[in-house]
Amino acid sequence: MKINAAITFLIIGLLNLTGCTLEKSQTEPFIQKLAPAADLTASADHSFIVSELPFKTSLIPLNDDAFVGDYLVEQISPSIFGYDTFDPDGGGIVLTLLNNETAMGVSYEPVTLTSMQRAFDADYIAELGFNNTQTYIMEFFSEKVYLPYEERTFLACAGESIFLGFPDSVPGLFDIIDDSEFTLRFLDDVYNVCNDEQLDVELKFTKL
Image (cartoon, rainbow, N blue to C red; front, side, top):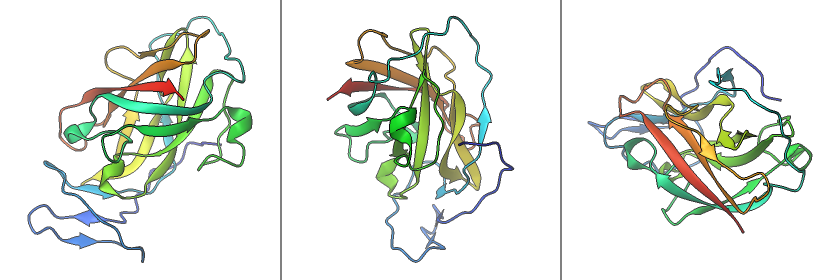
């Protein structure tokens, strides 16, 4: 189960934009791509911060077999520095959505999901190749889809962790009787630690 924890940082990769110096504390080789405007490093911390949501309406649980299984995820609007959020090559990525039952022993992190939540495992800005796998939780609530927690991505700028959170504009949308597709919207880099333009990112999920 995800729990609140003190924020700690373990920088396992360091990118120096001026000298292009790479350091990594782990023994595995890795490949790093330059970010255009900041130092992106890997960050290790499984804590999260509960978001204050601007709305609460009726509670309608999802059917157990709805919004689960494989979905093609396409980038509608980009993440920071123009990267795709989870897609490593720009061609779309297949992610597996899990409910509380199917997540048991499968998800990268142990999670407990409500009947209105689904989880998936993914690497944030996978194109950078940090293998920073995280279990992300989405909430399906009153025709809206959003991240109910400020999710740590395990990437950082200048040692400060990058979070994803509730969008500045509007959440994504879903139809409770049709799980063939839906959208997810979230704010990238909630605390603007990368000093890039803060963006509401949109992803489209299409069931396969």
